[in-house]
Length: 334
Image (cartoon, rainbow, N blue to C red; front, side, top):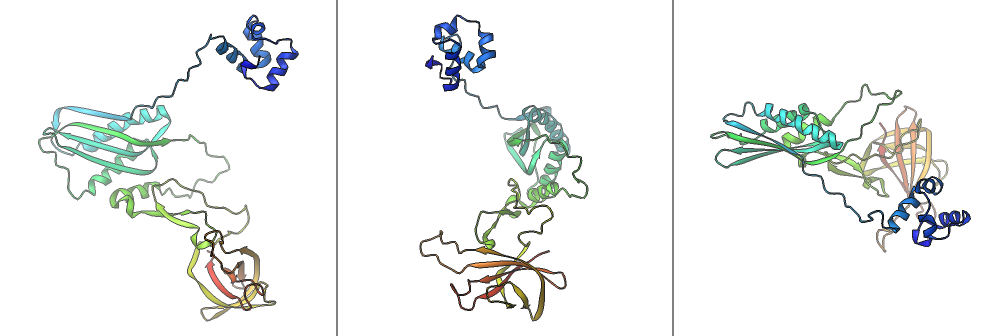
């Protein structure tokens, strides 16, 4: 019975039912066995008796997505080009919908009668399917060409391919979710990327780093979005949107040397602290190198009497690391 390889629980249940050999199982109807011991036992028995092929059938790679249009008479001008692209994009949309995908990169190949091939490509930050969105990007691409398309004696074949595509999740908006007032920046980013190039458009993305000044990085705007750490509902933000590089020194008055600030001076002005939260202690990242040593930072989120919020830290632990630790303003909250 161990040849079935069903696990100790299944073997114990079979023994309690008085079934101890494969032959006893083979003489019994399969449907009651599957209902009693599970479908896996029925499949394992059929494979053991060579009634079912147990060879592995690999999943074959799906063919590339491309559509084309041949012309009975060569297209001598580029005026109807966008209309043909829109018609081909509609056919490509049907192929993408059947696979549950959306195009991130579209390429158009223009085959001229003399053998010359002109290629245009556009990229999008989000998966696209709708022909109108695809045509909008190609219109922007054609208008930004430094060397306009030259049909020569005419184009006799136009091919639209989707070399890069991603899964598209069909989600439903929550009834209690506010969707109005949220601008959709994806069309604008796509237009800027097509006109000026993907290397000219970047955005900030989170990075897993210990020190706050290294916790973000620049990535291409078309890269997959990443979520930033979010505070709990009703809580203020954990980090300010604006950080000073380098942190700006401030003069701080505290009740005790290792306590929170009560008043601080910055840019010739004194700020009286009315609310504070902290400290958030960040040790120096000693794991970077063997010789890496440095003072500890104690961060405080504070609010002055005018309602402005700041992010200050004390550079070094009083007594154990420094006798007179300095204070710095690292950022301001919006």
